[in-house]
Structures are given as structure tokens and as C-alpha cells.
Image 1 (cartoon, helix red, strand yellow):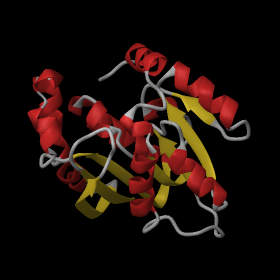
Image 2: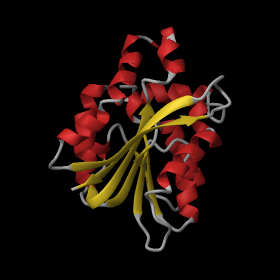
Image 3: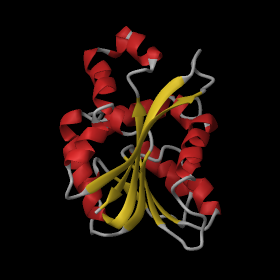
Image 4: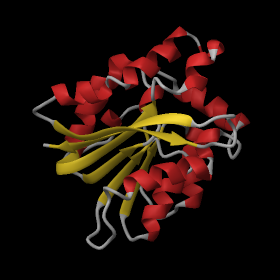
Length: 210
């Protein structure tokens, strides 16, 4: 798992030029999420876990939803707190750092799980289950194994490429947790990002909390 120190170094060097901070990345997430998050009212309480620069959250804030943001980097959380002074913002290493239970109608983890050691995925899913209301939706995305750029990037190392394989098994892992989730959809979508010469292939998974 990438540590807080790792992400702080990333955000010291790269911010607006990071591919995952691009409006194109946010737009791809918004197009998916709008199929599941209804217009407000009625308002839904949303946690954007691993929110980045919060462009996805900002879209739903404008629609009247109540949002909370969560990030691992001190650097990024300081920036978020300056930008969104009225929004609860959590500095976290995992969703286990968020207290309480049955808090959220929606949890967004857009582009998060491929940065997490697969050995911790079960722990993350359990903690998300705890903080979500019954019937709430968990919306996850990660690189699919059809993403040729990641598969061909040798310098990323064997462990990173293994995560590409594992992300395709995440819907199965969620399905096995029958006391916690029902998988509603698992689908691959292409995402065009200017930083890359070809479309990136994203798998998104939507699960309903029990």
C-alpha cells in the first residue's frame, strides 16, 4: 500500500498535472455516478474516499448533496480544507479511521483500489460496510486488465501489474461477502486522458450494502 509519505511526495511535485487530477478523469466518474446518485432533493450523504482534488465531489455539491471527503495525504488535505471550508474532510490511512456506522447513502472510491495492497481489500470492504447505511451504494473503479498502458509499463513492477489482475476479481470478492453486499454492476469503460496516447480502460463496480 502506498503510504502517506509516498503521496505527500507526489503532491509536492505534481498537482494539477497529475492525470488523476484531470477534469477528464472526473468527468468519466461523474458520467458513471450520475446513473446511481439521484438529483437532490432528496439529499444523500456521500463520502468521496480518495477524492483527489474533489472535482467529482464538487459536481454533486452543486446539486445539493451533503458530502464528506477523505484523503491520505497531508499536503492534499491542507489544500482541500482551504478550498472547501464548510465540508468535513478526513485525513485517513484507511476507512477504518472513520468513526461511527450507518452514516452514508453513497461511498465513492473512484480510482482508489488499484493503489491498495489486495491483502487489505477485505479490510476496506468491511469498514465501508460499517460506515454505510443499509441499502447504500458503494461505487468503485480501478484499472482493468485490458488496460494496455499499465500492462506494458515494465517500470511499474510486478506488484503493480498484479493489482491489475486483482481488480478484475474485486467484484467476485464483494459477491462472496453475501452478508454485506450485492453486486449490481461490473463494467469496463474507456477513458480518454490527454496524458496518455491511448484510452485507459477502467472497470467500475457498483454494490449495494445490506
